[in-house]
Length: 54
Image (cartoon, rainbow, N blue to C red; front, side, top):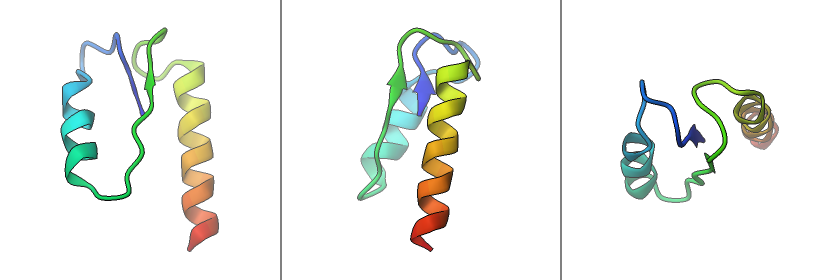
């Protein structure tokens, strides 16, 4: 996931990684910058899902 208005980490970088990583899922939070509450919630959910799959 990335935030659309994150000037320190533009969305093009995660987009390129997503395109190169088969099976990946990219979520862009359009209303936040780096580390906003929605982005943190989505990161926590993704990490929990990854941990549960292992």
